Length: 473
Image (tube, rainbow, N blue to C red; front, side):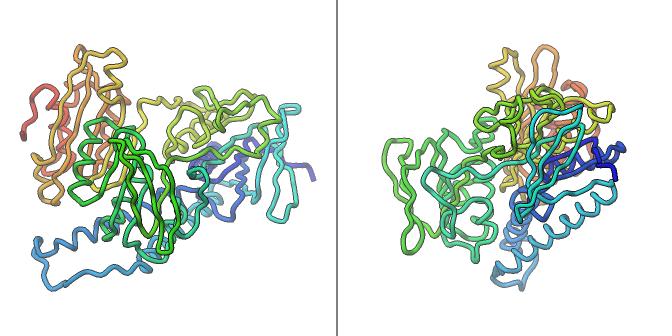
């Protein structure tokens, strides 16, 4: 029997890899998807985006129930959390969507190959060879005209520390056996602030330590200030501009020593510590040394079409240099590659049009340039800000903290950035992405009718605020 030559072989079954496989299958390509573990979905589905957001929803419901009397709901008594049931629900959501991915592979005629994939060198006669090792160490080979590297990332750990039942990463914290009475979170990016928000809602005493000068440092500075204010109001002890000196295990938990922004040394003891200081690309051992690809700090450089320096080899997802490590970025990159290989229409990813979402309470959604970035690029700006306190639906859902901030070009009115902190910010930002993608101006958005009463109506006031034309303030 003739050996199968695939049009595309994808190494890694996370959001970048499986999305690429599905789109390639939709285009009629012959696809192999190589995954080293026995379930598709990657970090995002199993120990990242999906389980974390499931816990955040639990936290949101619990916060509402604490105030049930204010909503005219009596007789509930003091709510009690059942951590096992919370974890079971999270696991059921994961299992459901894992099965969904298996179905999508069958539907789109994607061949799933279990094992660890590595490239073996340059293409021979236009065909690449990928070596696949199974758990028993047995190897086989996959032939493909194109190879896509989508191997994902791992949580970074502070030097000298190893994850265990007291020192946690995003993996361990999702399966701890009880809600900790106290938790120190090191790192105030999206992962750190989300877990701080979750466990504060669940009653944990939280200390949040960030090396950079502000929380969520990738966001607009006004958003960082508002989150810090909200976290202080919720009783989260935040320390920015703080350097962790050491983490020690004690009989009852952990002891974290850090130097605060004023130069004083602070010691915090807690049951557990979560290390959330970023993610490292997973590119060791995948055969890059046998190609022209030279990684930088483990990251792979690509052109706008996700092509590497080795012809016929693409890279997508968390391993790509210069792109944010977000599931939706990897997924879109996968769709771009599939279209490119199939000879279909595609547009490359534009960095400034990628939305960022943080699912804390309050939520954060942003796209485009921050005010500081826009100034650095030489734009003359008009900036508007509309507080959710002026939105009737925000009052109805009892979530009226935060604002919508719009950064625009003063000369032409082009929308350069939108930064939201407040209720459903992670959903509302989609409108801003569309506006920026279509190069809309403030004038364009001023006459987009928004239903009343809705949270999305605040977007109209946000755009109006740039010209001093917000209705509800």
